[in-house]
Picture 1 (spheres, rainbow, N blue to C red):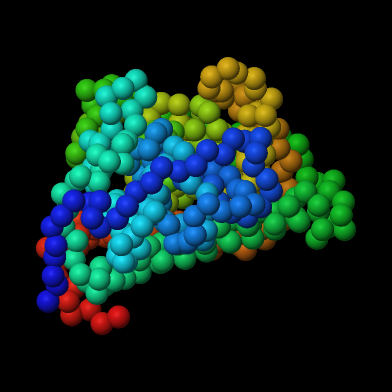
Picture 2 (cartoon, rainbow, N blue to C red):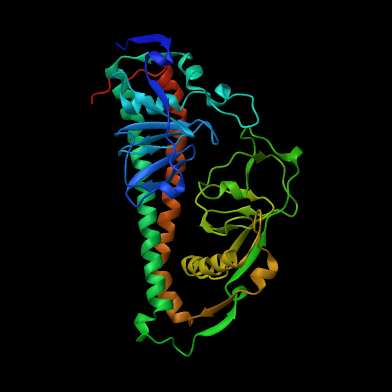
Length: 367
C-alpha cells in the first residue's frame, strides 16, 4: 500500500537558479543549454550532471523539462539541485502539475523565487510508488517519442527522394526532361485563406470546433474553440497542408481533427488527390525564400501577391504518379501517427493529476 507524506516542497526537492552563459562565451559542443523555453543551444561544458529537471524562472513560466544527458541550465531557469532520494522522473512529472504562474512576482517582468516554491505544501508517495507512477507516464511519453521519430524519418526520406528526382534529376540522367514545364503554383493547388473570428466567438472550454491560429501549427495543439459556424470559413481536414502567414513561413501537414482556419492562416489544397508530398516539398523552399528576402523590425508577413509569384517546374503526369505511389503511404502514416500522438497526449494529461493525487492506485503494477 502506498504511503504518502505531506510537507513543504523544499523537503522533497531543492531548486536552484541556473547559470549565466552569454552567447559570446558559448563554445561548440554537444551539451544542451536549457532556457525557460527548453533547449536553446549547445556548449562544450556541463554545469549539472544528468538526470535533471528544469523549469523557467523568468520568461516562459510553467514549462518543465527533463534532461537525460548532462546539461547547462541558464540563469532564467530553476533546476533540481537535490532530489533527496526521490525518483527523478517522478519529480519531473510532479513538477508539471504545479501552478507555476501563481508563484510569479507581480513585477513588470514576472519571475519566480525558489524560496516561495519551496514552501508550497505538497504530497509525495514512497519511492516504490513514485517509480510505478513514473513508469506509467514515461511509457506513454516513450510511445509519443517513437511516433515523432518515425515521422521525422519519413519526412527525411521524402525530402531526399524529392531532391533526387526533381532537383538532381538522378532517375533522368541528371538532366531535367524537356517535357517538364514552368507554371504557376495554382496549376497544382488552390490557396484557401482563413477567416477572422471575433473574440466573442472564442471559448477555451473545449466546446465546439477548434480554431487554428499560427501559434497552434507547430505542435498541432489548440487552445480556442467555437460553437459557431463561420459563413466564409474553411474547415481544416487531416492531411491538409497548412501555412502561417506571419512570422515563420513553414508548411505543416495537419494530423488532427477538423478545425476552423483563423485569419492569417492558409491551406495549400492540392488539386491532385495523391500529390501532397510533391506539393509540400515544392512550396517549402518557396516559402523559405520569401522569409529570407523580407526585412522587418517586428513580424514578417506573406500574402496573396507573394503566392501569385510562385513559379514551379511541373514534371509530366507519369513521373508524378510514380512519385505519389511511393510517398502517399508515407504521408498517410505521418497523419496516422499524429492522430495517435494526440490521443496519447490526452491520455497522459488525464492520468497525470489522478496519479499525482493518489486517486489512481498503482500498487498492483509490477515493474
